[in-house]
Every structure is written in C-alpha cells, then in structure tokens.
Length: 567
Image (cartoon, rainbow, N blue to C red):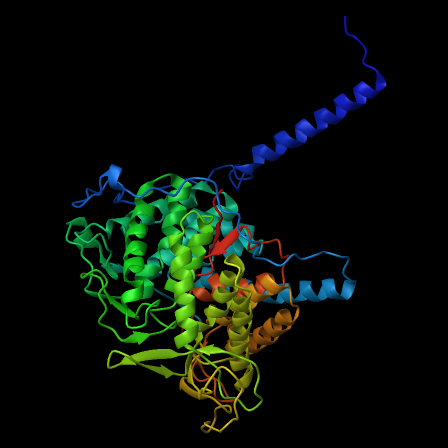
C-alpha cells in the first residue's frame, strides 16, 4: 500500500525529480554529436595511407618518452578583465549587434564565394573567382575558417564543411611535399579548435591523421623535423631536417602537439615537441643576444648559431608567444617555459623595442630588427613588420600570467603603435613593412621629418602591400579582454571600416591591396586563409560577449585557433 507523503516532502521530491531530469538532459548533451537532426551521421573515411601504422626507423622507446607533466595545476592569476554586466542601454546593445552583423556579413560573403567558386581548394582568388592550391590542396581555407563558422553560428555551412573534411585524404595532395609550419598551425590547429568547439568526433579523427603525418617527420637521428616534408622521403625512411631552419618554424608546434596529446593520451606528440623545447632551452643564453634566438638556427648541430639577425617578424615571431602560451596550456606544470619566456621578454625589450620618432610624440612603442655586427655590436634597425604586431598581445598575456604589470603597459604601447601605423596611412591600413626613425631612448624626442613622398610623416614604406593580415587586431582584441578599456573597441571599429572599404572587390569578396600609400587602391588576386581564420574572427570577437573564448579558459595558437586549457 502506498504511503502518502506530507505536503513539504512531496514538494521536495518534485523539485529533486526536476533537478535530476535537467541534469540528465544536460550531461546527455555534453558529448552528443553536433548534427543530431541528420538522419545520417557524419561518416569518417580514413586516408588511403595510415601514418599511424607507418614503421618508424628511429622510433623512441616508450619508456624514454617524455610524458605530460602531472600533479596539480598551478593557480594562475586571472588573465581576462572581470567584466561586470550591468544593464546596457538599448543603443549600446544595438551598436554592438550592428557591428557584429557587419563583420559576420563580410565573413558570409567570403565563405559563400569560396563555397561557390573554390570548394575544396586551398584558397579563393577573389578577383578571378577561381580556386587555387598553395598548401597541398587539402582545403586550407575550409579548415582554417571552420571554427569561425561555428563562432558566427553558421551551422549549416559548418556541417557541409565537416562532411567534406570527414572524407579528406591526406595522401592525395597537389604537391609532393608540405610546409611543416603552415600544415601544423592551419590544418592541425584548425581541426583541433573546431573539434573543441563543436564536439564533432570526425574532426579529431582527421586531426590525429595529420598529426601522425607531422610526427613521422621527426623520424631521423636528430628527432627534429624538416621545414619542408617530402611525403615520399618519409615513406622510405629518408626524412631529415635541413641544416638551417627558421626558429619560428621549429618553435611553433608546442601548442598543437601538446593539445593533441591531451585529447588522445598519445605521448608521441608531446615527447616530440619537448625535444625541440629542450634544445631551445639549452641554447637560449649562448646566442649572440642571450635570451633570444636568431631568425635562422642550425638544427643539425644542436642549434648552434650562425645567423646574426634577430626579429619578432617573419621566421622569428611565434616562437616567443608559444613559450607563455604553452606554460598556460600546461597550467604551469612545466616551469621551463616560464624561464624561457621571461628571459626572452627581457632580451626583446632591451634590444628590439624602440620609440618611433613621430610628429605628435605619442607614447608608443614598436619592435624592430637587430643585427649583431662583429659578434658584439648590436645594430637596431627600426623596421616595423605587420607580423610583429602580435607582440602587444603577447606581452599583455605574459604580464598577467607572470605578475609583471609593467609588461601589460608595454603590451598596450606596442598595440597602440600598430594602431597608429594604421591610422597614419591614407586609407587607414598599414603596410607589410615600414621603416622609421627611432628616438635615442624609449623616452619622447623631437621629430625630424624622414618621410618620403606619398608616405605619412615618420614612415617610409618598404613593402607597401596589405595582405589581409590579423596581427594588429589580434593585439587590440587581447588588450581589450585584459584591460576592459572600451577605447580598444573604438580603435577596432576604425580599423575594420578602413579594411573593409580598402579590400572589398566588385565581386563582394575581399582582396589584398598592392600599395596602401596611394589614395587610389588596386587589388591583388589573392586572399590567404588567415583572413577567415584570424582577421575576421578577432574583429568579430572584440564586439562579442566577453565570455566567448574566455582568456582564462582558452589559448589561441598563432593562426587564431583556440584550444581549451587542460584540467
């Protein structure tokens, strides 16, 4: 016979039952495949050659492999500003929505054109509206832009792309080789990020396949990968690194390989990049500028240094940001990365930072290039590369993580330096490379005109192109998230409106600009995949809810792909 419960007990029982139902519903959705509405699930089709089953000639015994560091994570300081959410007035809400919609519209126009005219190709040529393969023919723009599709809530497009990628054959390439650096940051990074956001398992499966191909490149006596990977040489066991390689190319694999190990439990990947990191650690203080590594390093002779050029521009850039980001991804469990980053940051500020000589004496900083002459004379060249504009965000993150408030201030000055360069040119966008005059110290100094015709005061443009690069808005976005200063949003919107106007074509696509110093602009028939992977993503995120890809939960690789922190 049933026993009647008192009224209060019945109430409690009902509430508990509702809580249980909600929890069951929630947890059943946590790892549910994305496209549950589809009658047919997404089918994974393995590549025709399995690098996982490839026989390695120089395999590392399992007992000698470096495992992920264990133990409790270090309690890291908060990176992101604590954003309060008081009621906003309707005008503010509408303004942010309008800005996001404008950027999303540009992304949608880009994606639709790619889907119609270049589906499955690496890039869309935005003037001739044709497909082009520059990265192996593995649909670079599709994979690079996949996580941006998700963030912009373009789910049908995401699904179509995912179904295509599920059948991608890494052994079917338009080239006989691939670039180690680009394949890692764009393909592996893009797949991992899209998987982390969506939970769609076929993306992780494809990431593992390309990760195994990249891992096979370490199969040589030195256990160091080459800059260019020959597929045939790898299959025959003849892979070996070139003697001289870029420091960024070797030093920008740690995030992707570490996250792949964290997600799969396969120690191969983490062991491989740890060998690279330890080589950098051994040689950091024996270079011509102790604390930094030259742009080119000798891989075959324990990273002995022959190059005398140091830069955070091309070939030297992302190595440094990966030091602090790897420390964060490992939750502080590997102190080697803290030491390397802080030593590098000090050397960068001492040797590369300069205050540009400008008419209005704005409190800005930039990073130049350094040549070491005669073994001991450090010659600073005040050259501003667009690529180096990432450094503002790097210094701000490092300042928060390691408790160096002055580095956050430096990050602000570097980010504003690049924003100033945008505003200084006639169409509001900065060129690839400019030369300036540097003040004798980091303090203000009197301006002496060094301009040439058709360039702004203080700037001489060495490479006048704008190729849709993201580094400046990347730093502006990070500084906004770290400081909460709304001025960064104003800067971002000014930059966006200038870029959109200058790069939009008659087809509704966006193209590179030949010469930003001219009032009348002409385009180049090129649009690299980082336009969708990074540039549009960072512009969209700065006007979005700050909890999306929160900086205390996610870390971005150098291609704008977000990886979730480990537990």
